[in-house]
Image (cartoon, rainbow, N blue to C red; front, side, top):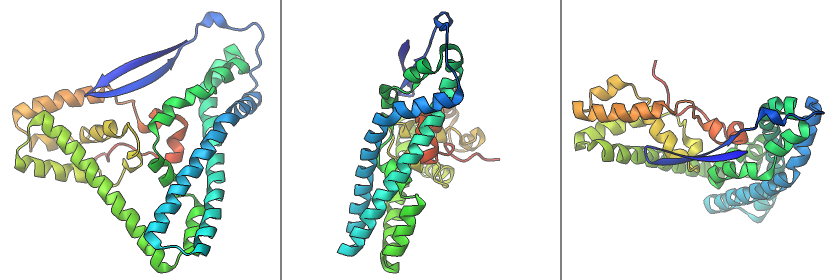
Length: 291
């Protein structure tokens, strides 16, 4: 059976699918060979894979449009990069399939030992099981991940002039800087609503947040509805002693209460929230940890 549970922490909704099955449903005769499980999962994924491939093509089309706007591409350059984009889609699709199969194997394996491969495949590899993850992943996240593919990066280096490549990299950096500033402003505004910060406190806290997110750990979450949760999570990972130097006693009491609630969800990390997408999007911890 599948139970959908709504959880609301700090005003941020989360939906989880919890799979529960009774031990009494053990089949009399089961097939649970690991290689058969992998092959069955791969077959079951074929319809989903084709939909993902089309989605990836759309993401790369956006990247090409971005390049055209930034670099004023020639017809020949556009033709070359279009071919490279199609190749990138195929390679990224292959990676998605392999990542997804491994993700399902890890979860279906124990189930298959009792219920058999067919039951495990039906339970874990059905198409609707991926819809929750699709809801979390935006085109910007996928495009950023695909742009890191070696084939695509090599194509850019070989096709663009040095000036075009420098301009495109500059555009990318400016966008990322804008996204990072927006992230910090979001956290600051949320904290200000809770703590009623003074102007001086806002300036100090903003500096603390910039330092906490300096390494871009949350950049891959920018297109995700989970981004707001992990941004706030990062703010509560700033050591309490640092906050105590900035906040009043009353504000600290409120901060501690919120931090405690956030810590109760400590096992919720970015990778687990997005299932098989975790390794593809190169998620990192939410905020650096101070030693």
